[in-house]
Image (cartoon, rainbow, N blue to C red; front, side, top):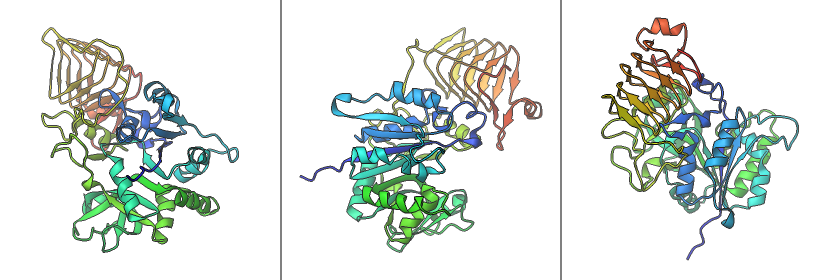
Length: 405
């Protein structure tokens, strides 16, 4: 029987997430709450842990306190067998400087690789919403003999211009070019109307990764980015292959949510991904018990609906009280209080928000601990809202953490 490879997971969680402001004003992007009960980083960690990859280093940098706390209090592995999920802040091991890019973050943290001595290093991003069994990608990587395998998701060519796009040889596997936001994305062999978009997930043979990082660190013209420098370098050497995400089979998925992946890098994308959760047959199903999304749930009582309070086509977190209010097409997190006569529609309400009597909230995102006064309106008059809140390109009104409205 073949021995399973020893795999180390490295999760890149150092991004500032400027396009998600004000949600990232006080936290790192991977720490942004999502889905009423999770943080964005819980999706990648759940995928790795469900696959049995239990030794994971999370590289952090900006505003990492809440992210560090979430990882250390929630993601506790068995010390008896040496498993761990650990946050690793910038340690300045190579001099008094921050990480200058995702490749530099790994290069400055190579002590983690040397200590663990893995056969394979799985390098995944921390801020996407999706399910994936990474074992299948690792298996294909080993069978191909590639130095690096890049996860690619099929996307209509017209929609791929805002992403990193993978061009392959006629075999559909060998990467010949890695293009950043191309105006005319190359098609997939055999499917010319689709393009491979990079998911930001990579599987490396350890020796190949170490050598590529060493060369990149000595290149003064490099910006030391995984997608911008390391993958093109290995592509030029003929060592890069693409993994077709559409072939990934995750237990418990339905035909409707199979192959789901969302980059929630903007406020509109963040809001839209929440709306994917709340339909009767959701585009992304959080209720898959065969491949669960894991996270921390506080010890609060179940949600309560009193005085004819109601929620339709919505998700409501524990500890929430909806008293004589009406909620529709929304995600309500834990510990939210919505008083009588209020109406919430098409919105994302994060933990600890208090909404007074007779308030109206439409197409909005309210960050943690916001308080909405009796009779206040959000998302009804966008011109008025623009003076007080952030409004996305798509017209989503966003109030920052602790805002009084």
